[in-house]
Amino acid sequence: MKKLVLLVAVSTLAACSQDNKSLEKDVQDIKKDIHEMRAMLQGGGGQRAGAAGQQRPRPPGPDGTKTYAMPVDGDPTDGPPTAKITLVKAYDYACPFCEKVRGSMDELRKKYGDDIRIVYKQFVVHPTVAYAGALAVCAANKQGKFIEMDRLLWDKGYNAKQFDKEMPAEAGGAPQKCWEQPAGCAIVNGFASELGLNADKFKADMKGECFAQVQKDMKDLQQLGVGATPAFFINGRFLSGAMPTEQFVAVIDDEMKKANEKIQAGTPAGEYYKQWVLDKGLKTVQ
Image (cartoon, rainbow, N blue to C red; front, side, top):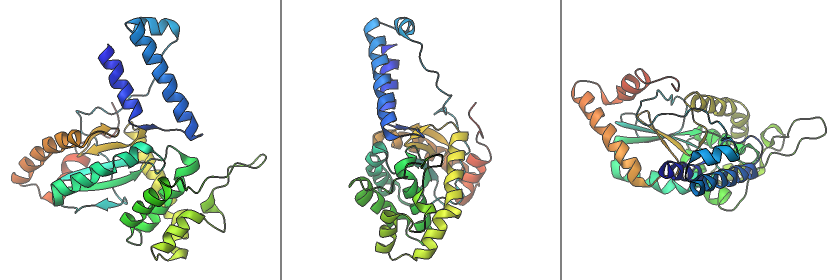
């Protein structure tokens, strides 16, 4: 029982939970979880914790042993479409664990080369500070500058604590979103200028196609049980949190063997993900 509680604690502390109010609520939830877990450990089991207060129910999450059909249409990609491994990364530009795992993604691209492609999907868990970044990187991708904008959002945005924040709602109104205002979002617009992007197209894409794309990303991820960032699907296999590179490698190598077998049997490499992940994988969490 203690091992199970500790595993839950590690997962909680290695990911940012979805939150539609504020970043501070994440911290309070984590503190509450830790307090409950300590009570369980000190009491020797779940019965004592249950007596002190019933555990909050959690929605079912993806099973890491199963294959899920995670769509990738329209999302930025680093790696060729013929890659044997498709690693989908769900993340948020205000999540410290998403920033922490960037190094692992670089290591995996170097290790596997053209055998892996990383697909980036937005899952905004801190909307008051991260939504503008999600839209901006999508708009930059439409002008061929995804990698460059992603780097700026982390290095000059997150690391410098510079965010285009959602403004508080006026009396009786909705929160004011910078991408809906005539002046746009000052910080990400500055990044777009630094990258030499077409400013009018950038702003239009943020408000139009990219807003729809981010909504689609979040729906795709929620459909398969994702509730925190970072989250990953490796050829449809789920992995959660800022895990060490070795844990990614273990799943990737396992999936690589499966892919090689199917490709040797006649499946074109460029069709593997569609035929054996999208077509055969689970469409919902069961």
